[in-house]
Length: 587
Image 1 (cartoon, rainbow, N blue to C red):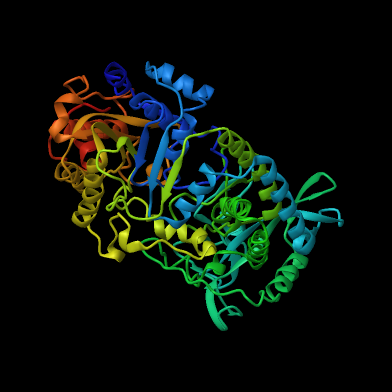
Image 2: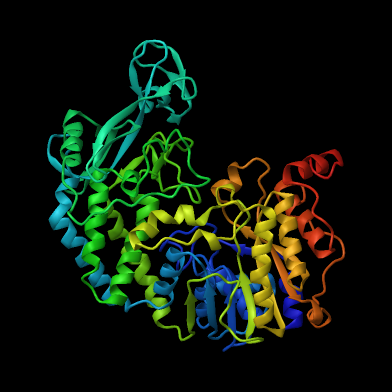
């Protein structure tokens, strides 16, 4: 194993956006189980038990199961890394405070029969289609009755020059080439307009579920996409569509529908979140009624199938069924490109999309069936615990290896994001145990570091004397890195070596954040008192992996060097970039 580990940590671990589980359900900062499986199979022997302290999407549990039946991508990763894993079933114990994360993990690691799931899912969708499918009917571009595939809505602004309303679509979208901008022209008076200089139009409507009037940003449909007898079509929204929206909004909620308040924290923005105080405000009335009907009918199935059906619904819900769904205009594209909600935020764009949920769920059945079929053939046992990892249930020195991906400081407020799904489960995450930096929760970097340390200390307790831990981490802030470094030391662990995770595509926040960092660090930890028995040969000098002239990767190498050599992380990413540039290290 020693030679394998020396080789393993000399290169970045590839992670990719494909594989057996990729198209099932989304989760912030999700790592491909195939990549983790190579690490598990290299660090452990068949039959060993691995632990994840912050299991999130459950990827470590799936990875442990995958060690029994390595896929071609796993074999390719092992070959690329130059290691010879010991394939075979592993067991896993997963801790997380997220009710959605642990719910999804339990379903995925112990699914029903794939065939039974497919039959049940198709029946569920068919039953709701019979009952409410007419809500997705619309006249096509030739006047025939068709089925809506999706509708693009638009925010409405008021021109400061002529005081008339216009849609964001009218003022800020141009065609040939297709472009979405924050600058545009008022269609009424021709004045140059921006989203910053012109007020968004608000409207006050009676909310039957809250039994009061609320004020929110005004949005109207502008483009309708549909299908008629196999022919796809697109047309501008018209008065018939507006009348249809009015009729749907007048429909009564089922009598047992209860309002679910949103608990806002760091993600609230007064602009596009105006009037969004409860779960149903994140949906059009049509899509809320459809999701609710699906959810209630799923309750009629046996528990294992019911939970799988509910995960199917939730896999589409937050990312594709709400107003957070959006469109983008790609270079040289002749039409808008549909995309889901941005990961890790609760962003509602100026061009939100209302998708046909029934059509979308039908497409999701196949990826789930494929994943379930794969797991049905695995024998490794996965235990999922919905509680904080600062108080593990396991006995001392019983765990062979830990692979964990803790929250990255203030990077993503998981509980705030996941509540869109958790409110349907009627069980939201207890935020008092959430290990993040959060002003709204009165948790600073020191508090965050202390909470991380408590979990790492527990991991040390349950690790075997020769057991190792691989910790994945990402931040552009020195105080977050230093909090982690202090937590590692205070927990009685040592940094043995480091490498990084090479993602095929960065997250939204990694791309747009000022001073963003490319790639997550992978940190190998061992028990302090057993350090001499777990050393891995590494180069003494910091390695600027793959692309030394890339400032985002250079910062990750700088942090890794500090961790390996017990140095204080003094620089934020932005400051480090400036320092690297002045030294001529980056051009």
